[in-house]
Image (cartoon, rainbow, N blue to C red):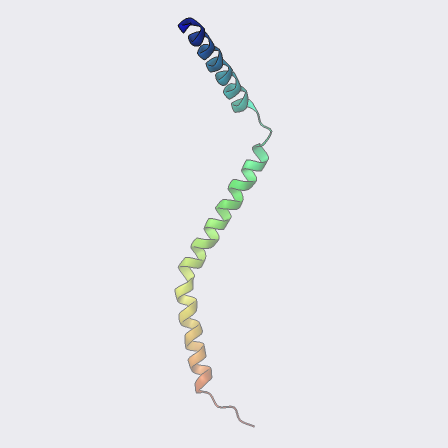
Length: 75
């Protein structure tokens, strides 16, 4: 009985190895993967740009608001 299980395990291992080799050689989803990677990269770059500029733009916005609040409207 033990030999039967060993033989079965070897057979399953060979099938997994064969499928892994075929999967590694397939190019069916390469364009999709490229698109997802490029989109994710651009999203991360956009987030970094926002994180780096948010403090500066907030300060400028506050200064503009202060100047406008001090101005009087003449009729």
